[in-house]
Image (cartoon, rainbow, N blue to C red; front, side, top):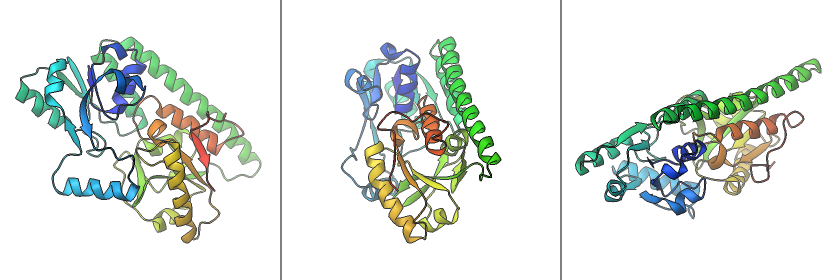
Length: 307
């Protein structure tokens, strides 16, 4: 197998198929062995030293010029002679589109099976794990894994339901309203499966676009959404980067009259933006923010309140 997106790599390893994985992208860093032990068949620009604004301008310029953000090392891919290639068409900013892969295979005369994963909801993500398991010949493993993930979601749901019921009996407000910020310069509202994570964690997503692409918004619109708290989950950043950006978000919202709304940062790249098994970790972490009295705190390096 060859994986052309980090979330698919995580799925492959979660299914116990790491030894069958021959090639990955330069961004496949979970588990770390994926990037060190496998052939790199997709390259791209290292944006780790760039600000969110710089990254946004670079992406917009590349797309406006009709240029790709990723480079497929076609000869390296052909040399691996894969039977199954995992790719996506969900987002040109996140990974190489499947059309590029098919064109390269046709040109090279390769006969690999290409499986395109395009989840738009949390359920879609879980179903994509089942599809990968079926195509890779380990459907039983996939069913067990998804069953375990759904059981964890059910435990979170039961915990937050109990906390909500207790809060209602004490005159509480019910499900807290949560604004997820997926990019900060310019601000983008969260889309696709991210609002589902909030709902599964016992919150009510606001200023969001469930099931569809994230879109550019404004701090005024986010402030007007009436959020009880804001979670900053910038695509491509782990907790340290999210904390830096969350401080900027706190200042921007204060300028809009929301100086007292709590602002949190979360390990977005690990547990929010990649559509793989660790999204359930994201639900658990968000539930711990919303219901700390009912849900255990996640390990260090996952969430941090900045205001």
